Length: 314
Image 1 (tube, rainbow, N blue to C red):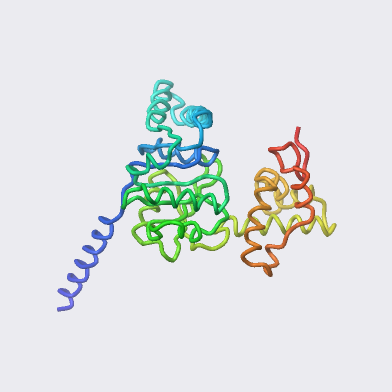
Image 2: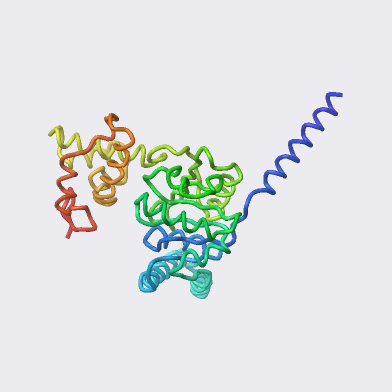
């Protein structure tokens, strides 16, 4: 009887697993909204792994510039991947590019897509307006995902009628190089949506990790307070920024010190994230503003991209 029971349990378990797998969506057609660094990178890796991609932005000029950037990035990837075979390099680049089309009208292309990945400006109102509009035109099965690094996924999903088919899909810059993807599940995200996005991330050659819809998810929630604590250490006069950077590189094995990193990320970006978190949790000491960083941002000294932040760049 025990043997029969075990066989029955195995059979039911196997059947349930197969049924759950069958329900997952295999994404073939992907629409990426926003063709900046992140959007272009997501479009590139999706197209390079056999997906048909539509890249959407506001103007044809922006899209042309983005596609040129994708081509240059693909050449670098292909040069390493097919070092001994120049012909294969050209074929890979051309095949991938042929899988990417562009559009300036998101509403007209989402009706036939399986997945929409948004990578536009970090502004909740703008994101809500976008998704509310796309929700009216997208197919019933289409899953929506936001690449936001700082906003609450639930707040974005609430602009749509498909909260169960909405999640966070947070890539890291540069997307073709960085292996990590944070898959963010809200309380409303269905298991089917979550598992489909985990599988999609793996299909892109990425390593997905899952996280609840908490401020900053995993990486930024640990990274931004670390950067801010380094700045506070400097503001108190406990150590110079140069010595803090050196200490973390040589003592902790980090590739960049916190001041080098915040200059690379952008002081405005870091401040934006911190300000958003402080609004949600005013009393949290980790989220308190920095007078030094606020002053630099006000002076438009935003880091490497402007030639000066905590350090000066030629």
